[in-house]
Length: 402
Length: 124
Image 1 (tube, helix red, strand yellow):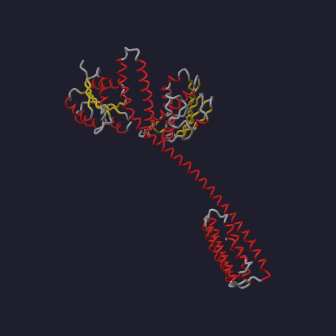
Image 2: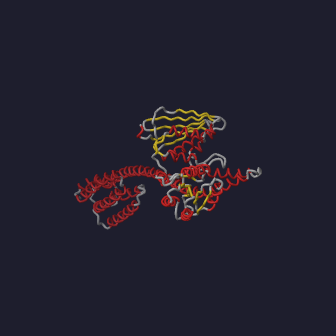
Image 3: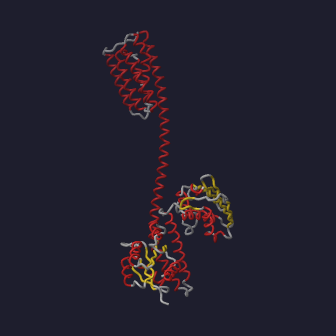
């Protein structure tokens, strides 16, 4: 179709020669229209518009041709057959079917008009075959080139579209995940709060019971079992509350080294004979992170606690801090059992744990990750099974204290 | 030695029972199921009650509202709040403004509360 007027222009010479100026001018106008729209639509990539315009002008031009070059070897025949056939490749534009239908109609009309003797045949007999063959070839070449260009552009568009689709899918998944986490948070807060009360009934009750049962040695283990159960449940409830709590001040100035030392004190009884703690703190002074001190304690505590638990017999935990311009890098590494590749991506998922049931909530690292992200920090984990694990945390330093 | 009297307010009967039993050897414990009942008991026992301890989450009148009323009508009485919420801006502000004298979290620690009440009664 696009080639139509190219051919028309090329062979307008004939029409000009035979004085069919009307056809010549029609072809010239059609060609100019094509140049303007064709070029602009290649820039705007509006292929549909290009297609439709080319069909319209082609049909108009063809129609004028019918009356001047009717006859069995009219180049219009080629022009009405080849482009529509090649239009088949112009997926996914559905207009191509319309074009094919219209071309068929035009061919029919032309045949009828010719057989009724209503058309003129302006091409000189000696040029007739040449004229038709060259036209056909020309049409075929040009249309093929444009078809190729069209499909190339379309392929590029498709690729972009696919990429956008993939991005959309990923983003949607992330959004769903975030929503799930949010609902989990809301639900956790509710559950934690509701469970707290009955838990305290049990605690209070067993507290008094155990006092009066001091004399009875037989019943002591049962009391202890209840107390252990209550203690673990309370731990889960408080972890849950912490995880879902969002109302605390984020404006406290926190010293990461003090936080680390506090956490080591809290874990002292676990670390004492089992783990050697190596501290490599930066000598830079007055490094402060703005945020929530309690939460940062919790984040660090959970990670160090995890490191300690990964060490089965004896091992080392190395805690390193480095200050660089606006950020503070905190590295906590252990020589423990490491994390498998499969599990590595799951460690920050709530309730994911490799500990036997009853031994861990699976919330510790989830809380740590959440807290660090809340503070605008970044956290990543490297691990090799049987060798150890390393947590890399990056915090933004407070502007006021530099 | 005569024991100090404390008033404990909570909307759960079991909590009232447990608190009373826990501290009955150390103090004389009066209990109330609501802020309203608490204020009534305070009116009847004004001279005796040294410390008021209240739960936060109660229907109709919450702990903070109750304590506000107590502070307004009974100046000498110390007010503690027991909360399961943990940190809360409203509560922290109330502590800072001396509306609440002490803040405890649930479940309560026997020693902390015993000491706090001991200090309060010595102070008055």
